[in-house]
Length: 98
Image (cartoon, rainbow, N blue to C red):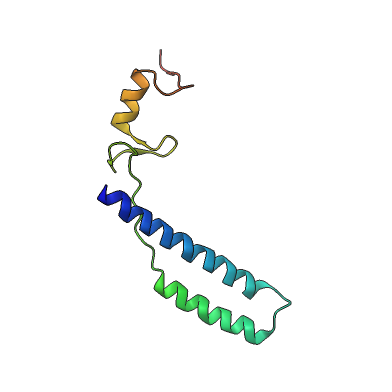
């Protein structure tokens, strides 16, 4: 539970920084703005990039909170995915090696 709350906070913060980054980047590339506003946005963008050093986000399983061997398509760990697949609880999943 503790990991989930930390991850939610980190992801929300990163999402906020990404949205700010895209807005500032679009202002710098827009030819209709003055040079002074473009310069100010470039300065703000450089400060934003210094503050937003890549945060290490860890993908975790939804049910077990395991971070090792994580399946990106189903958001389960490998062990839980195999267990659910054997019990046929994941719809539309077929085994390829028969």
